[in-house]
Image 1 (cartoon, rainbow, N blue to C red):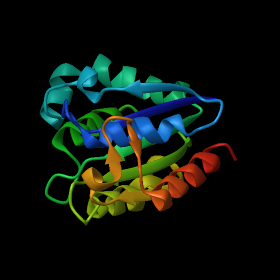
Image 2 (tube, rainbow, N blue to C red):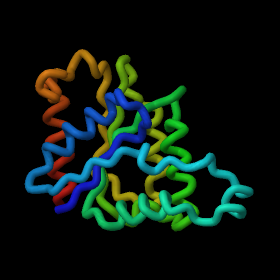
Image 3 (cartoon, rainbow, N blue to C red):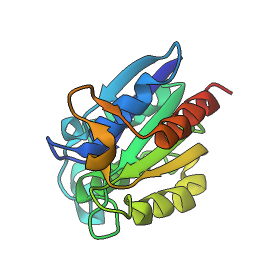
Length: 175
């Protein structure tokens, strides 16, 4: 199984990148490809820019990466209760290629934050909109208080309940 995993964050210190990397490592027998959305940076989307520039190669490359995967994992960073501008822009450009951005792929979505909310607002938004973009959501997991449950030295979560949730979600991708 080819698993595409990425954080919907452009931060070089992204805790969501750490979370999705760890979660992807729990998928048994998967060949994991970790993406950095910074590799797909584009000008801010607008109809005017699209008319001027046409389809951008970064959007096409991202769309094709999604299409080549058997399953997808995304960890959403939350900026003021919403998607990061970097991810929203990438998504907007990609959706102009095909509104079914996720191409029917089985997905596990997650989000984390340093605080007790666990980026649950952006996770709820992602889960609610996913069916409109052809995502087959198998699990959605919020991880609150990231720094309290993640061990930087080992690169792993230390909370047994969260580990169990992620392992269960990993199994759901294989079904």
